[in-house]
Image 1 (cartoon, rainbow, N blue to C red):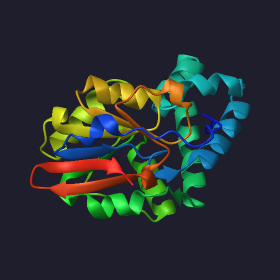
Image 2: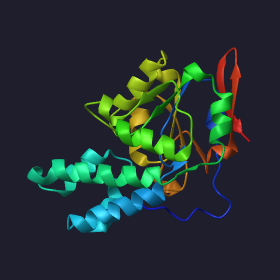
Image 3: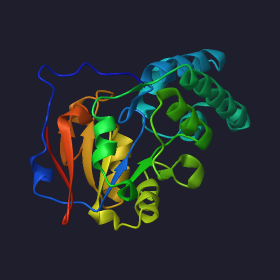
Image 4: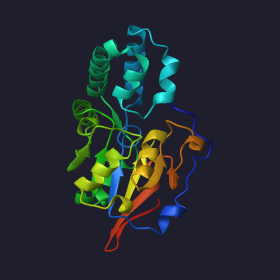
Amino acid sequence: MQRTTPRPGAFLELDQLADRTFDGVLLDMDGTLIDSMGGSMRAWRTWAAEHDVDPAALTALGGRPASQIVASLLPADRVAAGLARIHELEVAEALAGIAVLPGVLEAFTALPANRVAIVTSCTGPLLEARLTGSGLRRPREVVCVDDLTNGKPAPDPFLLGAHRIGVDPHRCLAVEDAPAGLAAGRAAGCATLAVGDTHHHSELEADGYAPHLGHVRFGSTPAGITVTAR
């Protein structure tokens, strides 16, 4: 639930992806497409204070659905109210404005519209609030936590994302900033690209790494989607 300090000369490694082609790209949202971290951290700090939770307990739970976080920190009889409250706080923060991360607009322009989906741990209303707050266009296909029984790190979100764009998950690239999301992508059979600075590079097990999508060039060829360093 907090940013790390990027290494000097931000780490970039795309060699394992450079010779591959993909039929689809499945993109996490927070920390991958948009910078919602500041508002989200403010919301969770407020929530923790209201619910007498040590904010340090939130750190190890980043990248997981809010329902999992709340259920792990509150007694069962307080979970429903706690979940409703963090949702209220995060939606309010999102509508106040969110920045689109570097390279995202270029990625959406380069990728075939029918071969890309957002796969997020947000609820549907929070997803819409964050897209509204960022001004980022909504892709044709979106998977949110409301669509699933099991969220990240289970493979279900990426399996459903691949299904919705009509692509074998083994022919998809999952782009993520968090260990739980990368674990979900691997479990679904996707290749993985780690981006962002919400977690230290050493925590991110992936086929490729980039500080943000501004370092990545997507191409569309008859053989499929390519990924190279920009």
